[in-house]
Length: 430
Image (tube, rainbow, N blue to C red; front, side):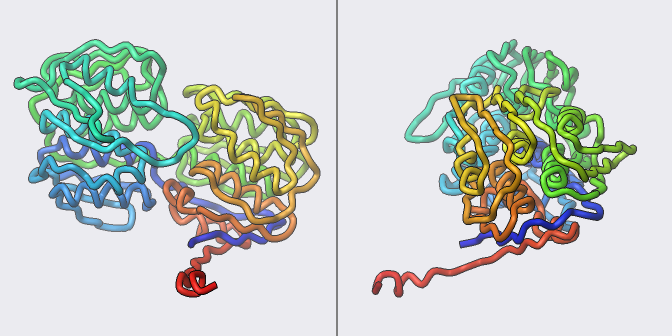
């Protein structure tokens, strides 16, 4: 069992460098299946989700070279359309991008229903709607999504998404790159990692326009060649360290960011009393005084991101007054609030709304990471709390944060990663 041990109460000081965007990387790697040549991808985050996808691609026959911890070369020319082991696919939500990539490359796909963080039902019906609009036959068989294109391959189609789904926007875009004709996707999500995926595919020879707007157009091409690409910085990782400074106090320079991508987060942090200074590719975050209450509602980009909701709630649990947090994307994402309550937070949840009455102090105790971002919130709360906090189930955290222990320790946090091994024979005898 792996857990984090935190002694709270230390202000954070110094500089932290943000890694490449997780949500871009986990789509680009499956999309590399479409490329007939060598992809060089830089600023790849070294996280468990990425390592798992690389293992899946390697098992399919991809040649992968790690030139440095964050630079990869992938050659998927000789991959085979094999079914990834179900136990691997169910450990990662982004495995659904394999459906679009395999469908585009081979004309058929068989991928287990995806796993990853479990904070409510997250159907892939909009993905399927897009594949069917391009002529694919899609069905669920024994826990697998099975998709097949007509004999002539996928054809361009017109898709209107019922909601601005990030995953569906990216998956349909991936599938459409090698389809014949023009595919139009309307009511698209606009997140920065969607634009990054489109730029990556275009760098390999695709013809995608409109990414970052409501309408994306994909003109199918005969093949994608090789190329080089550098992934954008991770908006949510940057926001998490900014929230950590807000909760624990201190003065930190967050480096390797795109400040424009951070507007939805910096605006809310300023509202609760954090001083923020923006530079070309860095943001300085200072928190010295008390935090103030605020209301937060998660929305599709450029609104406040759902992936920052647990982290900002951890901050608001220490803010003066009563804050209202409304979850506008996943209304079952508040399970972690019970863990904050164990630390002394005062939070009442009713459906998709949490009422947060700020307290003067949190106290350390043993808590669990319910999912990736909830785990980050537990770490933030532990940094701000009085006394000792133990965070369990941290495998969720390591799905999306590269070297979080090393980065926090460099800022002065008293945090360490502990691996323990249960003696099952002793337990059985007892």
